[in-house]
Length: 136
Image (cartoon, rainbow, N blue to C red):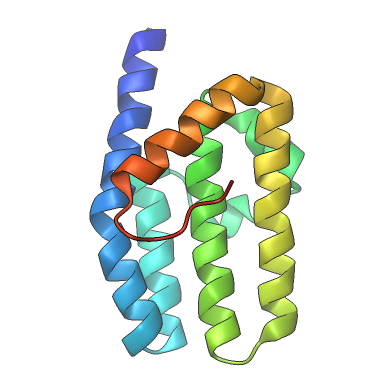
């Protein structure tokens, strides 16, 4: 069973990698609502959970829901993408809050799964996500 969960997680990383160019394009060209809708869809497709629900809770509680560090990294990446979209549209306060939350997700992932597993998760995301700077 743990192997199947990990395969699901790797597929989630690949799904996010497939959607990353669309998210970046939406951030640059589309309205904020369309960009946020793309982030919500990416979260549902890759993690099977609703983005808006996950970000309502503190980072530590959210990371405890996940079985693998890659899942925490995916959510951190999506939160960071929302922060970038907000910053590009001038909402710097909300962007800063999202940036801090993404950092908290990464820190909690390292605490829960350990630095080596979290580092492997970061490497997996960097391999799959085209030309977008990763969270380190």
